[in-house]
Length: 134
Ligand SMILES: [Ca+2]
Ligand SMILES: [Ca+2]
Image (cartoon, rainbow, N blue to C red; front, side, top):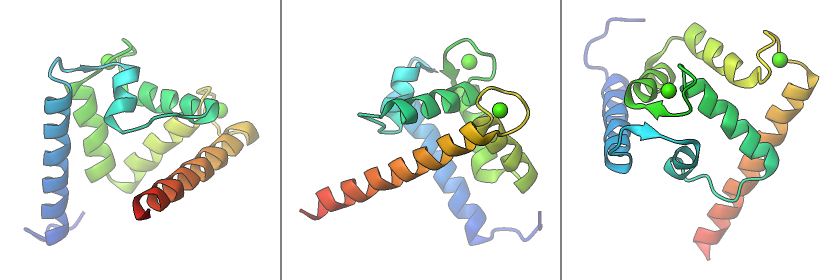
């Protein structure tokens, strides 16, 4: 990474991550997010079975010690990786996210699921945008 100090992108990212930390503290004062709260947190409602399975995998990726909760440290670790991590780190994280059965490779079914979920979420986004325009 370059050492250009005070670039606006870095400032923006720092500001953005600060907001995410505050969101966690205000919406989750107990410091532990359950799967249900995780969905609420990201505003994920009325998910199809496919999307729900995907979000569950995402939750498991955040929940590094597999205790069924996302604590603040796990949240910060995942967030800082997504916001500030290098390309390699991000790729590894996304790979883990998409390799649902943890086999070490992304097979045809997993690839199909990724496509299905991203199409579904785009469709949902379009719907939400349409709703707002009304
Ligand atoms: Ca945990
Ligand atoms: Ca796999």
